[in-house]
Amino acid sequence: MKNKLQWKFVLIMLLLILILMTVVSVFLIQGVQRFYSNAFFSQMETVFTDKLLYGELTAALYEEDPVAKIQEVLDAYQGRLGINTDTRNYYILDGTAGSVLVTSAVGEAGQLAITPNILQALTGSFAFGGNATADYMDIAVPVTGEGDSIEYVVYIRDNRQTVRDLTLSLVSLIMEAVGVGFVIAVALALILAKTLLQPILGMTKAAEAIAGGDFSKKLSVESDDEIGILAHTFNNMASQLQATLEEIRRSETLRREFVANVSHELRTPLTSIRSYAETLTENPDMEKETEVSFLHVILNESDRMTKIVQDLLELSRFDAGNVQFNFERFSISKSIEDVRDAVRLEAASRGHTISVTIPEGLPHIVGDRARIEQVLINIVSNAIKYTPDGGYIDITSGSGDGHVWVAIQDTGIGIPEEDIPRLFDRFYRVDKARSRESGGTGLGLSIALEIIQRHGGDVDVTSVVGEGTTVTVRLPIEPKAADGEKSAGGRHHALEE
Image (cartoon, rainbow, N blue to C red; front, side):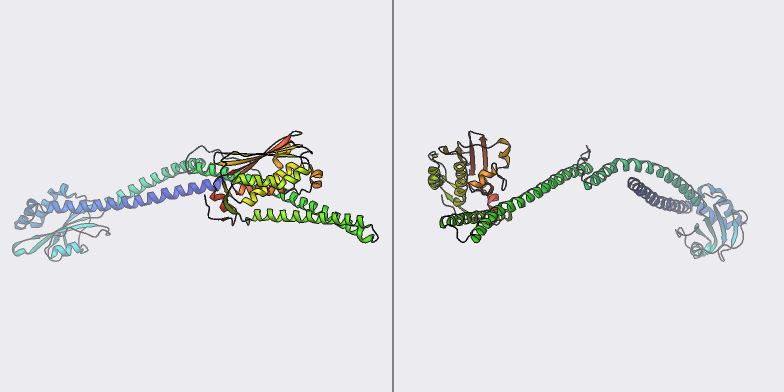
């Protein structure tokens, strides 16, 4: 590829040089020919319109030998006329037939081809013009006698040999320049190709490496031109692609774990239900008390399955963006008190003490009140479940920096530090056996996090094993449009202060 690109670049440079020199050659040659022709006609017109010369020509008519006298006059003006026996000659023509009487051309005599200028002179007019495409240049001047009779015609003819020689010299010079230009163009093209194409070759190798799964290749281009921008963009693209692929792999791993967890979570209650149902079927004479106990187990496991399915449907709606929120302004203080009242009996059954601390003037917030209370109940319920009997659960709140916060602190068993980052993963449990015993599905915190994030808030967890856990929920006081739109179908009701 490298050689192909370089030689394509060289070929383009050579074609440009060739086209440029061809155009220059054409214009230069035409310019020289035009200049030489104009100079010839201008020179002739200047000389022959000189009254002294033309007077001498007409005076020669009264000499004994007019032709010899005219020849003598023309010989005297050879320098001004540029007469050269090789390329430019004069002719003295008969004024009636146009035949050649005398000429400066060696070895020429007889009849000349009658040219348009000769015909014009034979009619009595000066002829200082010519056809630019003709292979000669000529002028014709009539020498008139008494009664404007045309006695002779002075004819000057240039065979353009000087122009042709000059043109050949120019062509030769141009060809030499083209040859030198080709050498320079090849050298410059190779240097430029190496300079300009090196980053592209690097990108090609990096792209091939990326196609093979190696994202470590980075382009090192320090220039600020378009090549540098392209290289930096390529590096950014490679990094983003690597991050995307890693995210895809992680998502695939999570998906497999999720499917495995769902299968496991559903299989466990199904196994229990089937086992107890088969026992009931196979033992029709079972004691009534045992039968009722088995039926209660079946119902509890059915409820657990229903809860798992409901939570899965809820999470799928979040993933699809089909969850609707009923946003309104409400008192977070009142919601905290309602949450306390909702879990009071559950806490009392375990001998827990629940305390609530709400500062005066805690701002009202905008959000879906029912869902936020659902989150708080879920967190407080977890604190109740994982706190040994007779523990303490403190609910505190406050505001600042455009947010309100609610912290739930317990004196429970705590969470190992390495487990905290995965608390909100779906089906993740720190103590799986105990979680199932307490009826947890491992989805509650995942749903809670989704709800809080849709409100533009966040959840923070700190814990010490054996001492307790603190979960802090932060929510913005005012809604964020981006989060509302993100909630896919979230309905914003008219808000009243």
